[in-house]
Image (cartoon, rainbow, N blue to C red):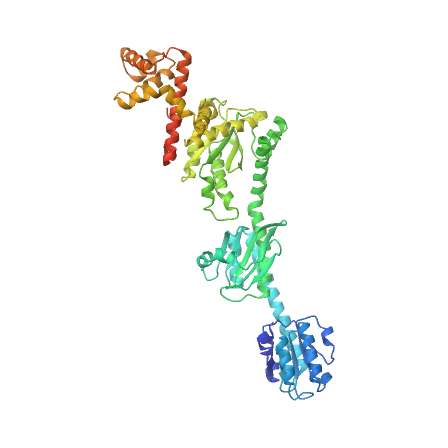
Length: 559
């Protein structure tokens, strides 16, 4: 208890206690009370004692009393009480000045004091106070243990702690992002609004110390929340409503331990499983998996029995993932958005009745999926990929989503399968073609994209199709669609006429006109191949142009 509280006790009031020096230091904690009548008492104290004396050892020696005052101040005692009448009728003014100078509270008893009663009452009060404090700490510990046993989370613990200390409580991660907050008066919004400035000011380096008490306005007691020697965040007691005490500091420390346990209960199984999944996929990507059996066993231990199933590698991501993650707040702000995506992918795969091992890798979701129906034909993979894209897009409505899927792969070739899936994913992402993309369907598109990025594609398209494009720009009858259908049908004129719903004679006329404009025969295989490649290149150019104009969210691969 504080020295000011001690001096308000009846035993001091009845003795006419009067503070004659060091009045600004009455907030000091009194740890114990002791009577002394020797001049070397400074060698016998440990700090925090309130010392009582009649002054007999000092006689009338002003110099000796001044020396003792200096020695006691250096020993960090709580204060010195001198009973007047036996030795001193009043304390020498020089001694009062010395006590003020060194910051030692000096109290005189103007009437006879019963030292036995003083020590008994003060010690009883200190012990009772300490017992009450320990009871508060134990009650909180029991309370939080019950909360944990009944499924209470971090928010519940913070709410109970805020009531115990009558001040706001904030739990932040190591990046100063608020995880949870509570205020007994319900003014959490005010705390959060001021948090960025408060969190980054007047707090010591948590890597150097695990706790602290700032004197900013408002003041703050804080401690580090650790789990298995790993720092998870910091717990802050904001002194908005009242000044905190050392007991509050002990309560805060106990609460930090309970919060760490809550985080362990909530997150540990998921963390362990996610790390194991990521480890398997990472090992596959790096070529560190030793054969088929290892893949199957590790997947089975993660709850995914892939035995006997056609396997495909899947890559799912969004071009705007990193920007979205910055808008999140929470323990791992830059990881939250990818993990939202991971959850959506897992849910979609589970609802489709499929089996998978998945993890977040390089801000994308990468998965090994076992197809539980069919034998993995391209049309089956296409239906799976389209369904996955639709389900995840529904869950993440504000994201432009790209899905890449490999060909069916044996367990020993999953590294190559991930390369295929990544290539398909990047085809969609680079081209701004939202949707699901199969490696099987890429053909030469990934090569055309690289030509576009180098600037050579436009020149190639112009050299092959320039005359035809000029004609279509100036004529009401475009001939490029006819050329595309003709080349796609392999030159089968009957099939082309049926698809275009025109007479064969009209088709022949269009072909003659196309050959005349281009100056080449469509019957020559090499010329036909060059023109088909140019048409696909033109599609890439147009898609990229539309993407650059901000329409990538609505683009689809042309038929």
